Length: 80
Image 1 (tube, rainbow, N blue to C red):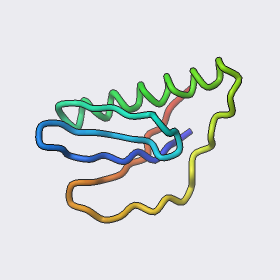
Image 2: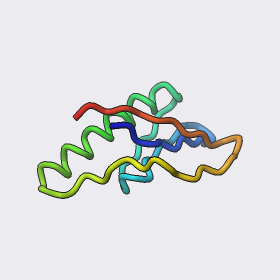
Image 3: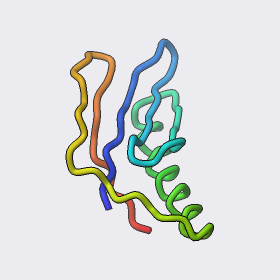
Image 4: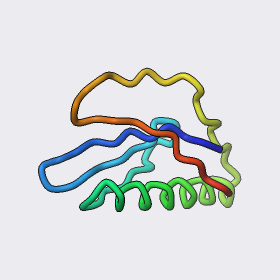
C-alpha cells in the first residue's frame, strides 16, 4: 500500500503526517530522518489497527495538496 504523506519544514525540524491515518505523525531533525520515521510510524499504526480489529483506511487516490514552499508531499509504500 502507498499512503500520501505531507512533509513540513519547521524552524529546527521536519514533520510528517498521513491524512488517511489520523494521528500518524513523525518528527525528525532532517528530511531523511523524518522519511524513515514516518514509514515506520505508518507500519506501526496499521499493525495496531489490525491487532485491535479496526478497519485499516485504504489509501486515498486523490488528495488535494496545496502548493507551499515549506510543504511537500510524497507517496510512501509500506509492506504490512
